[in-house]
Length: 348
Image (cartoon, rainbow, N blue to C red; front, side, top):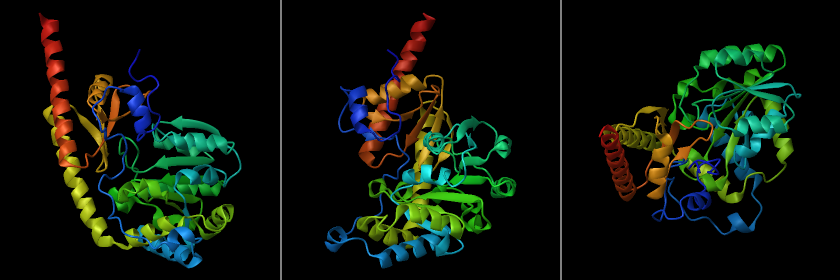
C-alpha cells in the first residue's frame, strides 16, 4: 500500500495521523499546518462572554481595529466572520455562476467553494490565464509554496475583471508574515476585489474561528446580511480586539518567526533536504523521496503536510518547543542514516 493513500486532506488532524501511524511516538509533533505554534497570550475572559449574546458594540470595535491593522480604507470595508473558511462559498456567490479560475497549485477549498456556488471551475498554472475568468482566485502568499504576486499585477487584473462584471478574490491568509506592500487591503473600495484575512494562523488561535472579508462597502453589506447578528462569538471578539491592537506583539512575533524559519532551513539543509519556498510560518520542500521522508517522520510521531497529487513535495510548519526541535533533528538524522545505508547497499 502506498503510504500516502487515505492520508489527511488538510493538515492538523491528529486523529487521522494516529490512524496512519498507529505505532508512532506520542504525542505527535504536528508540523502539518501553517499555524503559529506560539499563540497570542491567553487571558481570562469574563463569564458574560459565554453567558450573554455578543454585544454589537464589541463587534464594531473589532471591525474598527481590524480595518486599522489590515489597512482597509475604513471599517465599512470589513466584514467579520467565524473563520475565512465559511466565507469562501459566500464570496464566490457574489457574482452569477460563470468561469472560476484558481491560480494553482494552492489551497483546495477555493475550487470546491466556487463549485458549490455554481461556477465552472478550473485551475491555471500561470497568472496571465486568470484574465479569462469571471471569478479569479489567488492565494497571496501562496499556500504551500509561498509564491507572491505583486500588487500592481493584481490591480491590473482586478481592473480587467471589474470592467466585465467579474471579481478578483485574493486570499491573504498568510500576509501577516508576507510582504505587506503587496496586500490589496487598501484597494478594495475600488470594487471588484475581495481580500480574505485569517486571524487564527498568525496569532496561533485557529480554534477561535475568526476571519475577515475586505471589500467595497456595498459588498461588505451584502456579506454581513447573509450572516445576520452575532456572527462572531464573544470569546473571538475579545481575543480579536486585543490581539489585533497589539502591534508590539505582532512586530516581535514576525522577528521570532523569521529566526525560527531560518533555523528550520538550516536544519533541513544539514540533511540534504532542499527548501524550495514558503513563508516564515511554513517551509516548502521538494525532493524525490518526499513520500519516504513523510513516512519516516510520521513513524517517529512527527507529522508533515503531504499532497497526494504532488508526491514530490511536502510542507513543514515550525516546531513549538526545544523538545520538538530535538525530536525533529533526531528523526531527520535517522532518516538520513537509513538513506545512506540504502545508497551504500545499492553500490555493492
